[in-house]
Image (cartoon, rainbow, N blue to C red; front, top):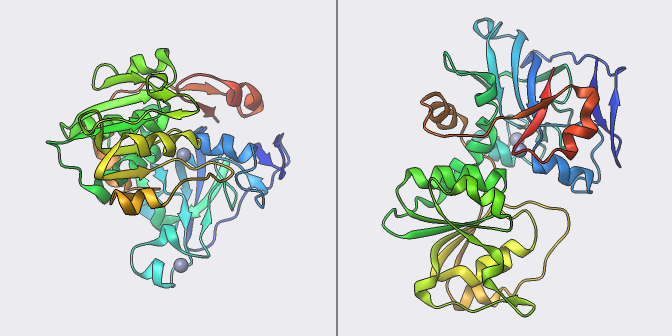
Amino acid sequence: MKGIYFDGKKAVYREDLPKPERKPSQSLIRVVMADICSTDREILKGYRPDFKGIMGHEFIGEVLESGQEELVGKLVAGELNEGCGDCIYCRTGREKHCLSRRTIGMSRDGCFAEYMALSTHLLHPLPEGLEPELAIFTEPLAAALEIVKQVRPDPSLNAAVIGDGRLGFMIAQVLSLTGIDLTVIGKHPEKLKLFEPFAKTVLMDTYLEGDGYRSLKGEECFEYVVDAAGNPSGIRLAMSLVRRMGTIILKSTYAGSTDIDLSFFAVNEVTLVGSRCGPFAPALKLLKEGRLRFPPVELYALSEYERAFASRAFKSGFRM
Ligand SMILES: [Zn+2]
Ligand SMILES: [Zn+2]
């Protein structure tokens, strides 16, 4: 079958990949559409040095074979993390933290291919009438909803999202639904325009001073700051934006490490919350109800992967 294979250093388009076989606990899926996420671009930069395999983790597919008969022929979205099923994390609803989990497109074959096999319990059928073009946002939207699940922000306070990319867009849309006073901080005036219907927008440069960020008064600061910058500048800006006793939610994942002063968190009693994948069911519900808006996805054939990866569209991906 056709697919985009990461050989440990770069992405390669191949037509000789074996069609996957499903285990009894898995379903065989024909991938209909798959989107590129910044995590995929980080993999190309070395975020997962040990990974070799088919890339991609955001997809919509049609179930071809499954132990769960009623799923056959249905369109589904799928979660990323396939756990072992019997460790303490898997048994307590934390499968995404299973130490021997295999994550599609990151530690096992992913969805940039014609077919994939995935654990049946990770599949979520699309609600009636929800188009794949919109449903493809389920995974990143679920990741944004995880913030609300973890932090339960007080809607009478204020929040800032650092990052004007796709993840920032999902997070800002979700936070705006709570009614909170919301500001989005980014580097790109043209991207920030997309946020204007539902958030205040500020250019990151406004906060620069010398080599770092200027110190702010409490009134200028935020109770909740979400770092979705996708690079180490995000946490540093978050630390100057957050109010004392406020909360920083860390969403960025990137290759490499960063130096920060941890005493800042002790002295200012700031809570740092790490946040990754989130719940699919409410994401599908929000998409079905049409309460969120997204620019269209730019779609390519698998063989055009170089153009797809280089695209500057809000979201690019593949139609199989
Ligand atoms: Zn993703
Ligand atoms: Zn496990």
